[in-house]
Length: 437
Image (cartoon, rainbow, N blue to C red; front, side):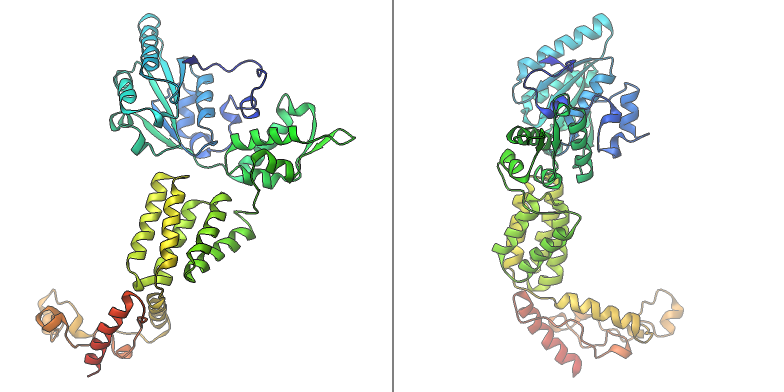
């Protein structure tokens, strides 16, 4: 337990990410949907009227930074706990101090709990009464979906603010700021020609990028002119991993998603999961990958395995709910299943051919026996006359015309002789023969 007061100057050994952490709203990079001019959360912070809240977002997106900004703006007593190290005893100690501050000094108290998802139910229950009575204003930070990790009564008394992953542009701004404004790095002449690799290997995590940069600088020997040129070699050594080429906005983005889709379509789950791993490691939006699999499930698998679209849609929902890194497991399951499915593009071809006839073919009318007759006049005109109700016939099938006259003999959907479509094909063949008779 500690007051959340930033030191005047960085202590020896303080990491770079901590040394340049913003202390004002204007210094925060990213999260414009929450902190942009006139946005509700910014207004609440500026007026020192912060409600209890849960900050939910990936690592390194600014949850702790936002808490620090609130600490610098508020006149309330500010406490911090880390859920990894704190127990119920620590929580109660803060609550006692907050109660004293309220009664004796009429002063509000704010409690920031980092990694609140690591608090068990008993620890969260200990907070509930004080949050409800206004003894404390709770700010919890989590990388996990609060719907699953925060008890419902506590969640209902808090607002959830979702922090979005930082873009490469955001990370570039933060990198420039570190090189120019950090009290230690600014004393040296540093060049980072492989900026894109540094940004990419950090996976959207600003803290990881900054601390990796600092390590890479230490691994770099200065040239005779005193300049430290941080190369890809030092970056990879700092992160202990390779900076695989992947540009979410450039050619690699399109090349790798193409390789992924074609591997699934081609029935190679091993290649599919490899290209999936390349995208995940490169920081690709997991929902983009999941959306493409939903499309693929209909376009390339269709009714050969009707369950594919259900699984793909469930994958999208699950990834959206649980986020990363756990979402990688769901993506891997869906990708390998879809790659292993029997394939058919018959439904895809059918809708495109039908659309072509609608757009370029002759104008058509609905056959009179298929029309509805909600009025007496329509009945007199023959609407719905001679319509045969399928369920009144053997096998719930009856021979009658459903297409308009210009296309009455047209066949759009041609199931392949693979997977579930083999059964569909056999059934439709018998129906087609009946209609032709």
